[in-house]
Image (cartoon, rainbow, N blue to C red; front, side, top):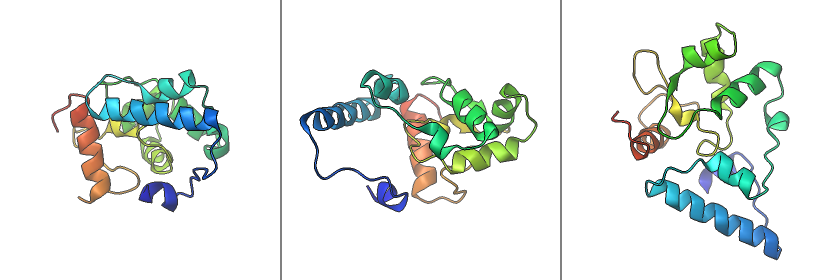
Length: 148
């Protein structure tokens, strides 16, 4: 919730029945994911008819290519910043990291699946030190079966 507040991702206080149902479904999907189910949260949101306006958040052609390539990486898979850049015909792997730093929904748009070329965990949510963001990335990778 602190992350949502910091990124100014508003959650409505006045929910109609449909919105309340969708939020309950999303909460259940996230809990299932955290308990080890092989759930693709991005696909789950699409199935719930939740539209993520990615073009509004990722406004450049480059950032949209990065995000569209990223959401194709499935549960249990990983890639590197270098390989993600290569998939979009770019050599700007550091710029890929800059795009991922601005990801407002890191569990749903799975930037935790992107690691450094040398196998190290790399940054997460714009952080490189051993604070809660890196621990979250490490935990999400472990949930998906990676030993980091």
